[in-house]
Image (cartoon, rainbow, N blue to C red; front, side, top):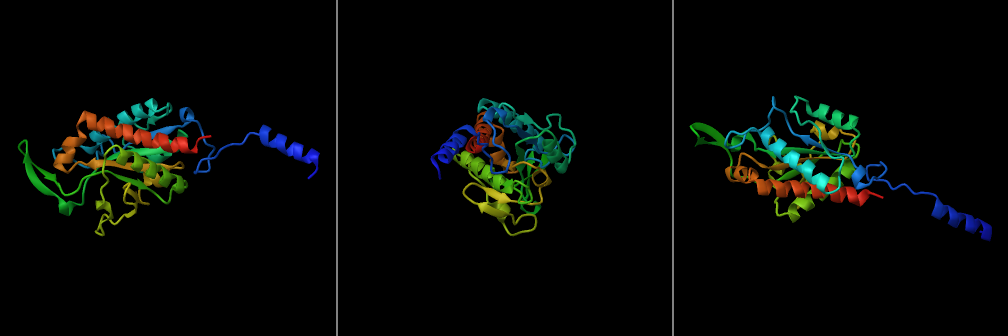
Length: 252
């Protein structure tokens, strides 16, 4: 290579901007410019599971999701938003479509967990027989291999799991049990990350997406814990930190 050619190459290296790319194939963004859609699982009309004390899952989801958005803002992800705060009856695929339309860079769907029906027993609470199961507890995380950014979804899930574990939370393994309704592939037992291709909110999203089951609300002790404001804030902070850590790892 001639001296002139070498000089031109050096100038190009130092003057041509290099665009960093995320693991999803999209250009990486700063934290402040990263758009995070926080999905409130279920709706007022279709409220999901029912807790051991008769509280609809949707109420748990909304309270935690609001806190997650606030903690994301505090962590520098200023463009984080609730996907549907009004509780409209939007199907899972429609939620993914809405996140796509809003050009979200990441999607986190907030839920609370139950168990298979044959594990449920009954107990009297406030004059009614309620269903419960104290056998299982803990959080779980799900990604879909059908998501076009599945590798980045796994990375996001691992970041969330690491943050939750560091905050003192423990994952549950009961979704891996080889029984009807379960049998999910637990790809990271330590972090509680499962593969579940049948979740439309994950598979139809164009961006990295993870569904969070924050805890088992049919477990009577865990239900009580999940309603504690300090505990809820700690989990919201851990979720937000996991998202922020993932976003920071792929930014320029």
